[in-house]
Length: 432
Image (spheres, rainbow, N blue to C red):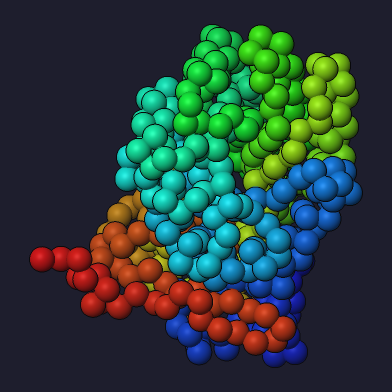
């Protein structure tokens, strides 16, 4: 019945999440409320880790793409599960370091890292700096020289693969703000420059072809392109590529029509391609890194809201307004992202109406979904939006001076706050 496997209907007709009553959670912690199921997160970490072990033995690492959901507690959890992480800003890096995460297992990405961020990464001892452009290459060399150390680098490569996803989240094609292009010779030129740069240590390369991808074929094609490029780098520059980071982008089920491939099948096919192509290209099988983010935390999250006004416009539509919206989930206005929704206090009833779920912001476009099947909603009901664990809290804003919601983590029948709700005082904390 439900998209998320950790959901059920209790004897009282209320939605349960990880065995806990969603209506009681809303009453205890307030709404809007992000609810994260730690047991699901840990199960996903273990599944990725096991598939890496099965297909690559000891020659691989799962690195959680923390832009999907970043807070101290998630870094503690994935660290405890033996994962690395990728970060894309000084703020994400600072959060991870504050949580005690091992910097040697950090991959620092970004197409326009600031001088301050690069300097901070070197000071922290970040294990892998993913170089995106020639200006960054030169800046990093100078900073490493000043610091008296060598920076360990990967190069972000655009493999020219069409990922068949939303234009805003396609990143592997030549027309992208990210990385070095293969077709123009830019990528080989950049690595050649690094070879002659004394304060940079070339470890390997990275690619990422997009997000929310259901088809395995683009990942297999990207792996083949990257390993063949490894062969070219060895032949023409005499450099061994020790690390190949194949990125993430694995799709999850937001609504019933979504049909993501089992991750183990992805790993089986991609690992076979890597090994075959490595043999053909005359290179050793590299240390493989993958970077799942959404697929670790997305389905582990649910957002709970309180229904306010219900406004029926005869012959047009019915608006169901909630006490959150684009401030805690901007994905609908950005990508027209679909979600499964239900009235948590009538979870066992049929979805008898089709509505538009509207947010509270003073913005006509502040919607969480249109043409949404839903149980008959009334003011005071609790609305649950499924699969909101990724790119909701991390993309939240204070638009209209609306504070960001709390994050509650569930584990083993218990719940705890891991990010407190913002107060009015928090909203003016930086004001002078």
